[in-house]
Length: 302
Image 1 (cartoon, one colour):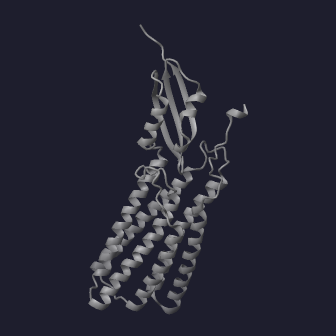
Image 2 (cartoon, rainbow, N blue to C red):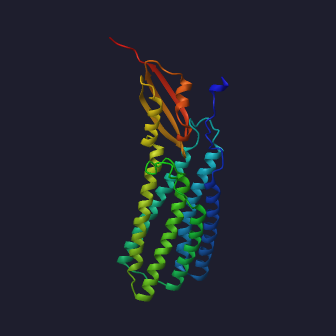
Image 3 (spheres, one colour):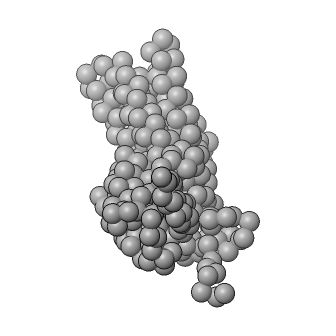
């Protein structure tokens, strides 16, 4: 019976590269957060204090991503998870995307408020805060650096570490906010274009909202068992229907973790091959780690 049993960890018990990188970025963000909050309190700068609290919100989001990595790894052997803990990765990314959406709404709201009721800007301190934030977030973006995996269907959203992408988008949103703020503050200080500050805030909110929308789509597809990309489905049908009298009657392939799938297949054939033969036809490169095949013998009718 040992040949028929297998575990369902599917590599989720291994430490993913994104986990270490996320923890490093949390440390950087937390240190900057503490320095800005303490400096804001000591020097009475609302700009420093506000940016410190803003960094705190992203530290929370990054901590959720780190928790998702650790939880998935430590519970990989828990039999209560039918197909392992791979979807914890997508769940972490989904929560991160929701926080990004809230961040975008807050940016837009604050920008509109400042358009209606402009506030006095202390330019030198505000620019210093923005530059400091850009430097820290630039380093964080470099550390997390997500390379899109072109081997997978990007639009289907199954081939990425969604948790890492969520963390990456959070620090990228921070870096974008700092960059737009620097442009707006310099324009306001030297050219008197005070309206640039809230306008840049709205531009940033729109971009962050687009990132959030894309990540929500890709992670929800995993969480809701969306079918695998058409290329994967077509390849499976092609290799299984290589016999003239064989037909794939039912095919379900869904993501159970980053770059891995589970498949449930129903085959109808006049002269069926063995279960082992059918399984061996499916290329390992497709990332299908759990396969259930139902074989039905086609009965001739007069």
